[in-house]
Length: 159
Image 1 (tube, rainbow, N blue to C red):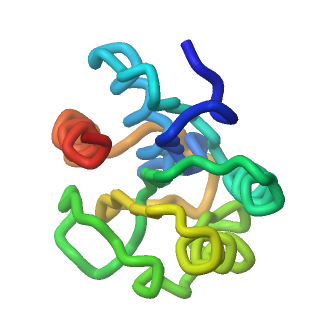
Image 2 (spheres, helix red, strand yellow):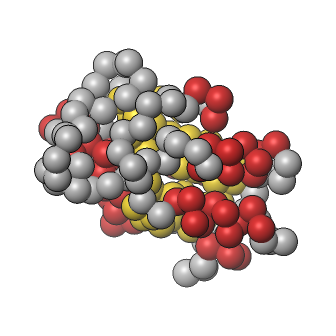
Image 3 (cartoon, rainbow, N blue to C red):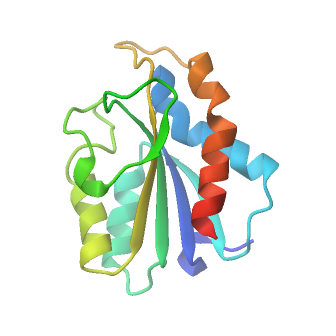
């Protein structure tokens, strides 16, 4: 098993598992790790709400992956459970919570990795059904049912 410093592709599951559907990214990478054969050049990691620290470290590093796939839940005004690739420029400005990937400087780090460092940055997203205001772990059923399809999208993206 490789580590993320030596990997060509990083798959980072983002989100806070304590806030309903925001925990989609971590749940997807867990399912992916348990149910798929991960190629040796790919590193899959649950980064929870710590994606900024990892991206900042990668930006400052001389060695970077060729591709980073971010898996995260967003509220983009689509149908709940809809999985789609989100362009960096389309990241919603509205924060889901204070630990969100959707706020600065994370979106700036993603832009810098793509535009200045030449990293192929992809964001695989799902339209949330519910992000509670208070701690309430667990995905809604429609989001849980979408996990295998998100994993297939990841698999197609890493090829």
